[in-house]
Image 1 (cartoon, rainbow, N blue to C red):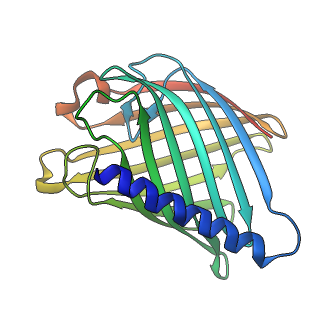
Image 2 (cartoon, helix red, strand yellow):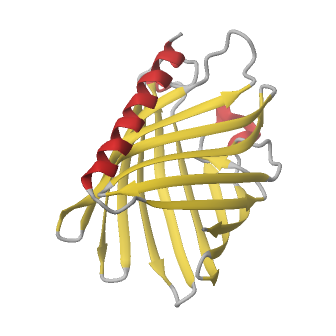
Length: 231
């Protein structure tokens, strides 16, 4: 029942933010759509597609700093094949060269086995800035019910990126997923490169890993190749 209540609250929050943004300016909001294919779906260092290829589609509406988005991707665990994601929030410059992003993210799943409440809502806050050509950022996500555990969890990440050439970009992140009691906590990290094939087409190659032995092979190091198109 809790997941449905969260879903309802999230829906009205997202709708309210979208309406506020739309009424803030006379001109219409901007809409972006992306389609990504990858050799695997890895989330916070852990495979979600059982080491099989994945396809992601996402759309975001933005206006006056407010945004609302929806996305979907294929997964492969517990007999579940589809994940859908909703997000809403505000992003803008709060100081010279410093950007703040605050909002909500909801992870939902289709055809979940009976009695299992996996749907999860997180509150997020992220800050980013740049030093010369190096962009750096930090993010914190928090939920009071982490994927059917009925326990709170916090995800903390530090990330950075730097352009290597006009077309090549290097980026990486280190993070910790913290679960109540530390029994399910682990560290994760990734590093990779992106290549701008065209103005709206990017090819990526990234290595992911964790130190979560209890995750088994799902948390082992892996290389993911991706191809993204932004519309």
